[in-house]
Length: 288
Image (cartoon, rainbow, N blue to C red; front, side):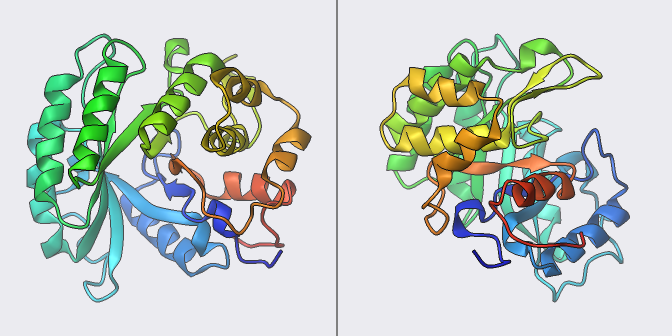
């Protein structure tokens, strides 16, 4: 394997440096992201994620050269009705919007109204991927059906799910996550994940006591699901706390595109990169 990250992990990690727990100042995040994009591991890194609340007429002033083609992912933290405002400001700031991600409902709410609004926005955007963050609760499967129907009509919209946070209920069980991965597989839906995926292998955070999913587990699970594995078999991969079967699950697939799973955001690029190197999925002695 060459030093360059293999196709299997291309674009796996979006740069969420400005989000918790990293909370990097915008100027530092832009500088660091530019460094990541120029590094040997650049193919691993997706766009810099910025909240819509940070996009103002003066945002990024002096930080971005309009000629460099700086790309971001816009996170809708201000509500769906404010997303068009942020999107309208970005071209004048010299920024390209590669993707838009927004929650369509809180836990327990009907996701359909918000999803309908986000799909309408996606229909108006050209060349921008839109991800609807859907709670893993009431109305989930119906929402996936709506997204599948929209994609069949050529709308660039896909699903996004939360896999962690500041409360235990925000961490889905392996069975719950396996069910939604297989539901996306059955509908031919790409999906993104957010929060909690700090390391490659499933583990317990010593500070919070929360059990975190490993992004290596998710990668193995997505590969198995794409190959037709049952929900039970996918869930079993998500429970693994030994890195060896996860490495075995991806052997021989380094040069193939990653199925189903688009990727995840991390406030640190170095942490997932370090784990990928340690597991032998990426080669390199690196400076990040």
